[in-house]
Amino acid sequence: MNFGGVDMMRKVPCVLRDGVTLYADIYRPAGGGGYPVLLMRQPYGRKLASTVSHAHPVWYASQGFMVVIQDVRGRGDSEGEFSPFAHEAEDGYDTVEWAASLPGSNGKVGMYGFSYQGATQWAAASLHPPHLTAIAPSMTAANLYPGWMYAYGSFDLQSCLPWAYQLARDSARRAGDAEAEALCTEVMLNPAPALRQLPLDQGHPVLDKYLPAYFDWLAHPEYDEYWARFNWLDAFMEKPIPTLHIGGWYDFLLQGTLQSFQTLSAQEQSPKLFHQLHIGPWTHIPWGRKPGGMDHGPDADGQMHLRQAEWFRYWLKDEGESGLFEEAPVRYFEPWSKTWKLTKKFPFPGMEEQDSRTPVKHLYVSGSTLPANGASGGSVLTESKENISQSAAPDVFVYDARLPMSLASVLPADRSVQQDRYEILVYTGDPLEKEVEILGTPRVKVMCQAIDGPTDLVAVLSVVMPSGEARFLSVGRVEVGRAPSTSGVGEPEAADILMRPLSFRCPVGSAIRLELTGSAYPLLLRHPNGIPWTEAMKAGAGELAMAVVAVSSVPGAETWIELPLAEAYTDIKG
Image (cartoon, rainbow, N blue to C red; front, side, top):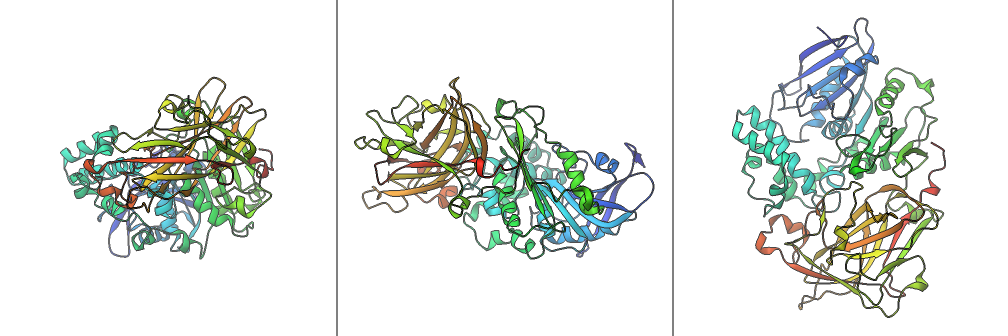
């Protein structure tokens, strides 16, 4: 049949090694043959085809590709039982080889898609199907534990719980359970009550029935054999293929995107095997220009449809003469200047210590005669150790787990109202006399002491504009007070926090601001206090307690933030 000017076949069967049949829709340019195949495997119904972020298969077919969109096992029309990620490696391998043999195929297969559809690429590629030539995973992770479920060192409840209900919704529909399907839709539209429910690992009977894997995610808070099954990166590296990584500065899977690219970029690159990274000013959905109420300009889309098509033409159509290899491997969007920039490498965590030439900007916390509680407090950030007060008392905040401090997302929203809370220590630098462009992972070292820990220490970075807005930039957390004394008063310690990667050019007249507090809810899992975070999933409302944290900075034991500067990396004009 013809749809949108291309040939279309619906519900085409693919029989796997264990006899299970998966179904796909196929889009092919009208007439002829010898087309490279673009394969997407997804769990949301193949008609969707990742069109919340990617062009419709008709567009890719118009670019000269045969496009195969397949329902994964147990989803849509496909047979079998769905368990997130569990079957995607073997099923993906079989599907790649089947797709390569389709009439009209040239035998070369590329995989594309974002989020779960990106994970199916890593899973299949980890088994090295012979006809899989290149992939383009967007906003996903090749190692699920650090890159998806536990990206901040604690469970990503805000992202994973509503998503679990989304997956359960389709399972409920397959089972004909309209009541459960409706409940799942309600949670997806209004997740706040479910996020507040305690204990976190109880009281979700719909998930228990239709997505029990959710409780496996909670039951394994530390990397173990369970998570090793979903680390496809190590196996992929045994025989890597060209990979186009696509991420978003405001995407909850940014760390997963960067972790996989970091591993691959350590290889020697050649025209026969190289990788690229594009990071746009996008949240998970949509890839638009105005996330967080900040207009990123008309170039925010980055022409990613065309760039993906170019990537696959290079690898699947033998168009190596296109000059793609000569391009800079990293292309990223800087939000304040609203421009795309190019660089030969990306400053990953730890790189600053390995390369002493990398410039960083240090800002030191200094107390004053007033406490640092709230933005009206008296403590500051200073560029010079000599300006640190030697007589100021430590700053202290109280974190009550029953009333966590809020941070709803990583969008560049204004935090100035929230920063008035006295449960937050706020340190602000002087207005900048020249621009400071940050690129990479900020690091915070905090000299602290906790009462009734363990508890969380959360750092939030923002830039205060001359108008008074405090635009969010980054966040990170670490557990402190893990070994308190019998009195409940812990020993002084140095907390090291690696924050979320970012790009931002702070303009003249703006100021850097650092917040230190005990929570960033619901973005980060709230620590109940008094028990290790690995047991937080089992804590009930009656176990939510208070913790007290003192932060000090004296000469010789400074509290500071280190900002990686872009000037060492942006060595190519975009």
